Length: 517
Image 1 (tube, one colour):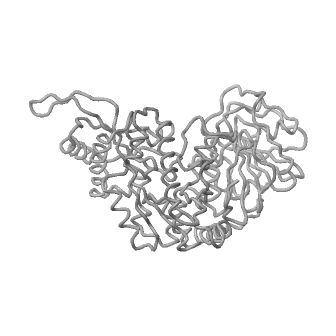
Image 2 (tube, one colour):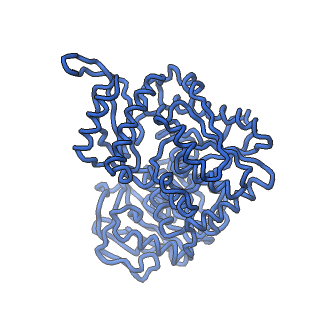
Image 3 (cartoon, rainbow, N blue to C red):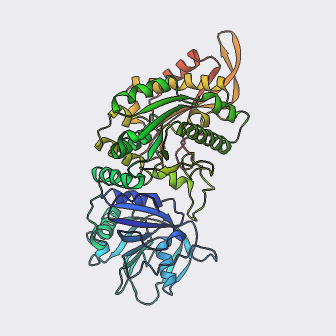
């Protein structure tokens, strides 16, 4: 559970590892209700203000011996429960029903051939409504006390409910775009069945978080916060500043992996925000720690270690500093923790997730830990933070360190800074910057043959990456104009010594991450 619960009412989502779990949370938040995802085996009691629980889908099969089997005793009979896909199949098995492998894998679009609109969950939905299936198992028998409320041509038990209990199950995914009336079903469950009021707005989040921060930090403690110039750390700083005022001490670290001239630009941006900001140049320390490291995960951990060391040193200069503030957001947490509650083995670690080493005396405070990137921007707008900062593309803490594939050196950083400056500057000049969610350049660990004039060259290749997204959990490549890409490529090759080839990344997330690493 998060340390700060930003709403008096919430919906709990038990995660069984589905790729769609975060979409459920987002759909709920879109109707101004706070939702929280926790691993299925980490629930011991319902959190305060919990109005309902949703069981997510899963890559597992309920037929597997070691498949997730949550204890629902604290839920059923206390709050409404909705099982989605795997969650529905688990409810059926738990009720004495039968789930078996489907004769044909049930993936993609389907249409409801039976809809009991008299049921609260399906009120307002229509016969023939398109839904999205994604499962290899199917329910053959619901067991006693469950009744069917919707079907498709191939799936008899597309939806069901318990007689006399507020328990529902659906084998399709209402949270995905292709379930056209999915928002109706979700709203029915959240607002009508669970009785949520939809009070969770950016303004209310800010107000509640500021009050929670005051309680958490106390009346005399001081906080040091690492600023990056990005949206997350800036909004976190503003919330903390409003909560504790001049007891917040902000530090902006030049880790030697920033964009060109970024250190000076960021410090200038913060001058008129009323924040107490100190700039620290520590590039040599980071580059020294990174020397010879090739593995991207080891590079992330090395960068994280030096960040912690720098903040530990800085905290000793602030008398009474008890807390380390961080701009951790919800996707960072989701990508760093698996559905079984341990570190994710499939995505990546985040330098600001997971606590601090034992030698540090600082406690961690994370005002944004519970919200997504687009929600951070809405909160920032509600706080009156200037659009230039709120519109800045994400630039993860490891910076260019994870955009240089292979070992990191000062010369490689210089080359990539020049390339990145041309790319980002070009996007701004062409009016494309705000159409892109995140963009950057990657320095590849290979050289290729080129011809410049009469000279044969053997120099570096760089990859340009630009994506569209809302929260970074999923992303598609930006369809930038060919003429723009041609100009940027030409400018990079002509102006950056050491680069003779430019490629453009057209892969989506998933399967590819936004950063190359």
